[in-house]
Amino acid sequence: MFIGAQVSLYPMTSDFVDVITSGLEALSPYRSDLKIETDDMSTLMVGAPETLFGAIRDLFAASARRPEHVTMHVTLSRGCPGEADDPACRCEVLEKAQDESLEERKIKAAAAVRSAPETGVDIDLQFSLYVMGSGNHMEEIYGCIDFLRSSGCFHKTKNFCTRLRGDAGAVFETLRQAFLRFGPAEGHVTIDMTASANSPSLT
Amino acid sequence: MFIGAQVSLYPMTSDFVDVITSGLEALSPYRSDLKIETDDMSTLMVGAPETLFGAIRDLFAASARRPEHVTMHVTLSRGCPGEADDPACRCEVLEKAQDESLEERKIKAAAAVRSAPETGVDIDLQFSLYVMGSGNHMEEIYGCIDFLRSSGCFHKTKNFCTRLRGDAGAVFETLRQAFLRFGPAEGHVTIDMTASANSPSLT
Image (cartoon, rainbow over all chains, first blue to last red; front, side):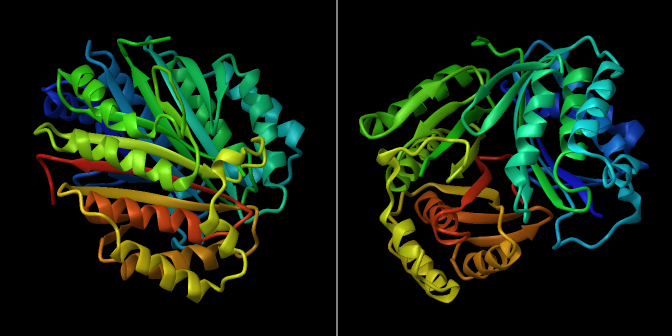
């Protein structure tokens, strides 16, 4: 299994380089456990989901603690057939999920969100979950939407995506659960995600 | 068929509201042919692909003509089983593609890019194409990558996505061809796309 993300941080301020640089400091505790490569468009992070989602959450929460409007886009992927297996991406949640029914996975996902750490930073997030190469992909999507509605972070549905709102700790745990517990455990699953904080047009 | 996009423009300047507002003026010629709805995170655009991609291209090109660093994120979707059919989204390219081989589609896609209009604005773009609910989704992805490599806009491959570079006219036409000609014509296909212009860290 190969698990990773392309991450881009977008501070809506002329000091954007400074916000990005200080945000990147939040990645320090994770650098030894993640492969991290940056180019001019995004930062690749590869590793186990526990670390990966912690790094993404802390990067965004650090930037959102500043007063400026900031957004982040992340492309997440697990199990892409075109990527070589990487032992560093091993994930116990995925291994166990292979033998669990959709109902069991919904219950475990909800429990994980309830025990998520609190960051003290409120954020908005919208995302799409994609399950490839499976005949019943919509069943998994609808199961995931059931979980999202009862997650405590559900804000609204939109065309093509679902909106979450709440503390960054619970919101990113909800995202991690959606990514790991829905779609086949050995399958190719991706997420297209956008987060936002301090928007002047919050509705 | 239901075809549309969630579009977000991110100007990296303290005058971001002004850049977004002036960028939105570029949508004027398209408003009568697209359903457009905006909230604090993104703008939904629904309609036929010819108009939809023209609107997205012109919005980004208008913003990229200014000196500030600007990025755009777009979630594109066609054929999502959860969305009602919309006659306004009818697309002849998709209808014809049903009877065409992968090779024929690659040739037609390349020809369309060669006749794309020139905008005079150079941009970078990276995207992932997702083909859902089909056993041979990787065959369509690899066919699309063949097309991208010979499109004239190919820049490099990255984990999870492909980078394009060039005039906004050719780049967005390449994106439109990838979206329409690969994956089953009646299937559920999505794109996760990020564009960038005027980056201070261009590599």
